Length: 186
Image (cartoon, helix red, strand yellow):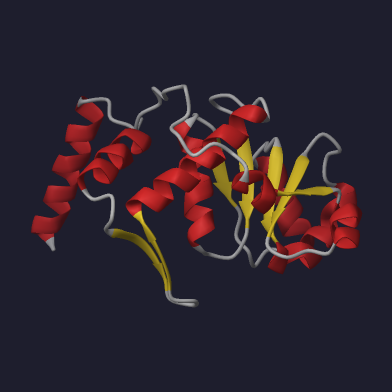
């Protein structure tokens, strides 16, 4: 146990000293192991390689830039755990946007509080949580842009005033975003 802790602390110190970022560390891993599994989703058996995760996170980064978000902005992610959540977090990090990971068990006042405290400019939620978002939708800031992932009917999307993120990401570029992030571990 102590050996592992010391190795992790040493690796972290090394990354801080070299001013590495999560996206730069991930890029090195993609270069070394593009076809190795990065994520395995046990619920569906879905497997994403490092290369696939990189391409999808690049699409997320381009989408974030197209929204006008810049380093330091925050986007709330409210969805059950799945590979897309990792791609969203990583893609946002590639352009310096912070992801506020909102617990998917929250409802009503607790959900509103967490989204509000995060000072998010947008809310990305999974279709499985549309009912929870519907409960608080009228209390969310009108300036907060909403995006949904998963299958929602057009009438549900209209009622929630949200955009279909899956189709947006499907048409977004898959190459690395044009900017680099200098925000490190500190």
